[in-house]
Image 1 (cartoon, rainbow, N blue to C red):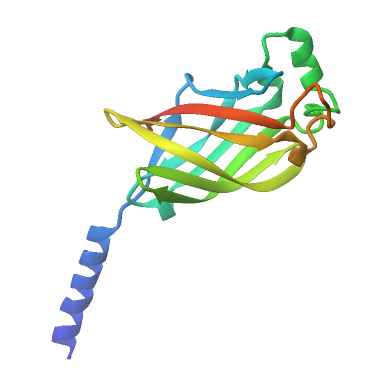
Image 2 (image 1 turned 120 degrees about the vertical axis):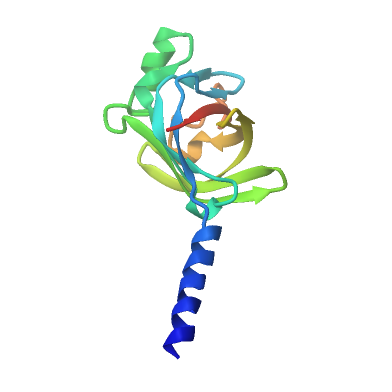
Length: 177
């Protein structure tokens, strides 16, 4: 019995380790872009950091965690930048960061959907974000666009001057660590 058992265990371990795929750690490049737009305002978050672990063949092992510094908002208008930091809008003094942490990544044809928790101004909600993945010489670029209702996160007050829905576009180039 022992003569048969040990080779079976060894074969099982070998086959299991041969098909295990590990997601790769990536570094976010400085040339990232996360922009928001509406009729008014328009701008971008200049500072973002995070961790990315991704492999299209190991989506269960893939994970995205991003942090945006609220103080890095740039609208092209200094007064508007300052106003965005106030208690009414992003309340940078109390909530200096916006975070997005994935819980699952799904493949949809040639594209992906990232499901995770977006936390802004103390409000955490599940957010599904569509994502395209571009590949160049081992590097990746995540990109996409989606709508975000600022009222869901208590950013500003309801107003005719500022639309509730913002268009978000992003491009996040990555290199292997």
